[in-house]
Length: 232
Image (cartoon, rainbow, N blue to C red):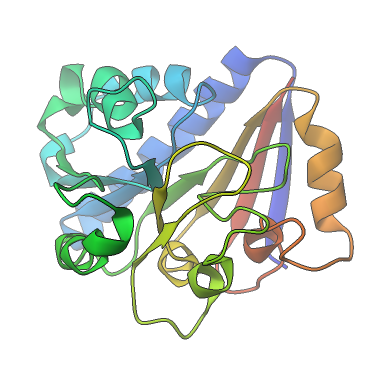
């Protein structure tokens, strides 16, 4: 397991440290490869991070941003991760970044997998950074315990960058990057805030099936380095 953990005294300190590390990695890939790829998650936790990144001096025109997962709602819906990213990240200096959303005109995410796979092919083969969150049920991305397509999303041999998911314990059908696509990153960050996340993380680091706490699929692999950034 290639995991490191960084605990911070405040969320501001976490944001400053994580933004600095992400920007350094994006800049290095732009300099060496001519491009960089960033996958981001939704929710309340990353808003301050997105705002900090958006104001950073970086050649954002060479960065392609996509989502780790998305609820199958209109892009102007309050639950849309695309709306969150457009509002808080793709602003200021980062407004010129290329963005690959997940939501299409298809009625369901199952009908959109082929189309989105083609769009995601524009990403660098290896993402520079993938920023994940984690729910108190142990889900990450849209790898929800008990979801019918969980095994497919976690299948290392699946030749698909995305997978439709219908959670049993959360609203809205969803589209998620598959585990194998997330693991094709140079660095994965698990960005966590709140005291309630600590015991879930500790449980996930312990023994047990991946299907019980799907975040284990990321924490307990030796393919891609993972860093946990946490603040209460």
